[in-house]
Amino acid sequence: QVHLVESEGGLVQAGGSLRLSCRSSGRIFTSYAMGWFRQYPGKNRDFVAAIGWSSGNTYYADTVKGRFTISKDNAKNTVYLDMNSLKPEDTAVYYCAAETEEDLVASVTVYDYWGRGTQVTVSS
Image 1 (cartoon, rainbow, N blue to C red):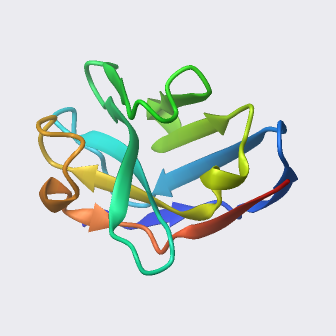
Image 2 (spheres, rainbow, N blue to C red):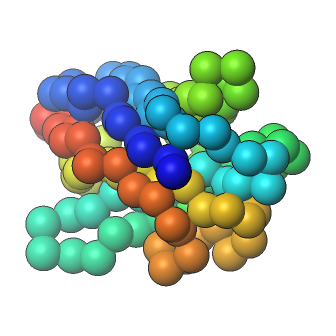
């Protein structure tokens, strides 16, 4: 069983940076992919970024490409999301997720495990 726990988000000014982390208390198998999604109030969850646990392949939404970086530490069972040049429109609840196969990583429906989410607020 995979239990995902995100780090605390926070409040940051526009143009600033923030790092989120997500640690799994269960084993992440080599076939897995880990993803980050975000959700605006009253909206569906949107894909942000993903990384193959074994392959290391990274995937990004166009809206964050060049500003956000996803990375992982296999030994710590932890995935990170480094967010730079933050904009007010990045304000959302951010969720960490895991899927058992690195496939269709941008689709919210393929993920089997989810964290509880963490609030990120970017002030203008």
